[in-house]
Image 1 (cartoon, rainbow, N blue to C red):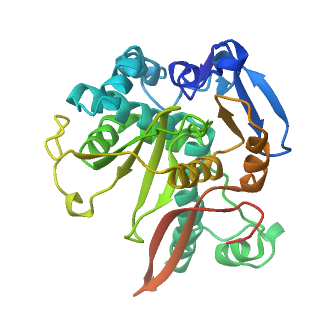
Image 2 (cartoon, rainbow, N blue to C red; image 1 turned 180 degrees about the vertical axis):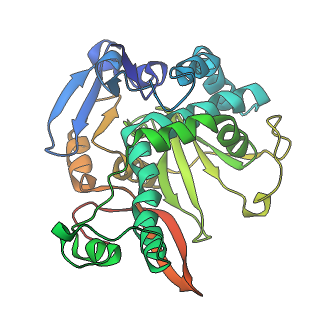
Length: 319
């Protein structure tokens, strides 16, 4: 079986460290603080991870990757010059959509709406009498009661939301490519950007319904993808007519804030292109955080209105 990368190697190689002869990068594991050196081929990979049996073409995402991976370095160079080309937007938006579909974090987040919604749906169906009687061995209880006591649980196959994401990947690319982007040029060589096993970091926006995505592309370059609520429900085109951008050169303190966002959003590993005494402490300080989905079910007539939002929080603290 192939070892499939869910973060493209062409991306990871941009974070190779000069003090490691430009052949490896510094890696940190968030779970135990272990530091190690690795190459792009060693990490962010799952055996047969990009094969999805729910799809008529199980390896279609690997074919899609061929559209953007060979042009990744060119797209980064184009954005770094402050020249935005629609092809470069497509390449970076495709990289983001690929990570969101195929990474363990993306798949875990994709399961969350089903995990929150299925118990509610089951209770509503139970109330409507749509289920056969519960087997006597389980006691004289309703489906709703079994759910409430934890005897009936729903196990979501993470490949299913992955398949939905892959099937709609062009729609995701089109959406990202029609949002506003901040092109973030890092001029502080002593504080380059981190990357991670989930390099589409979650950043709160001014609108509580939306989150920005901070995507490190190279140690010197990142983009902040800012959703535009006014485009909701509109038909968008992959020619990116509504795309807008601003080139920013953040001060060092803001770079540290962006790095904090990147490290906190990572699933289990972060990578850095240089050795510095402060790096391990920085990672350790933010290692307990990760991206999560918060869901609220609001009674609405005979049913519920489910509202979800993506947040970054301490993984050991219950929502």
